[in-house]
Image (tube, rainbow, N blue to C red; front, side, top):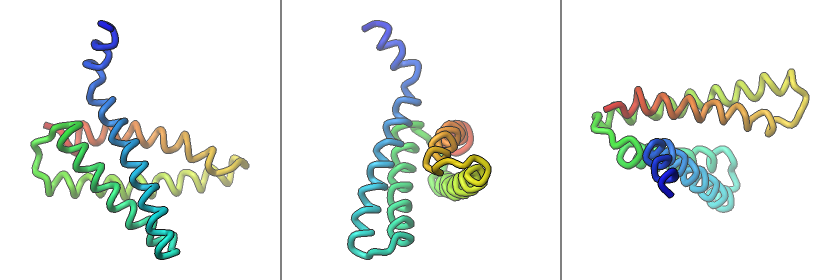
Length: 131
């Protein structure tokens, strides 16, 4: 138990970040399905779900994970810039790699998203929500 407490203390921010990421992912999927069911428009459902889940993610990361005191409007601008860049890097990376590695793009997307997840954590911790 002692070692578990030390581990949690040492990696507290990372554990919270992962938890918020999972909750944001679940929210994104649920909203996508809800919006897609009512409007039957995948693009619109994707955009609306991503806007809401990203806002949820921003608020929790800013206030609970990193406990940032930086100006909210500046952090929000940086955060959504990161969201847009991350989406573009993900899309183009998966597209390019899928042309060279002839496997299902989903299997390519998983490691790409994992690398971006780590990069996003570092960018958010040290640039967006830095104290």
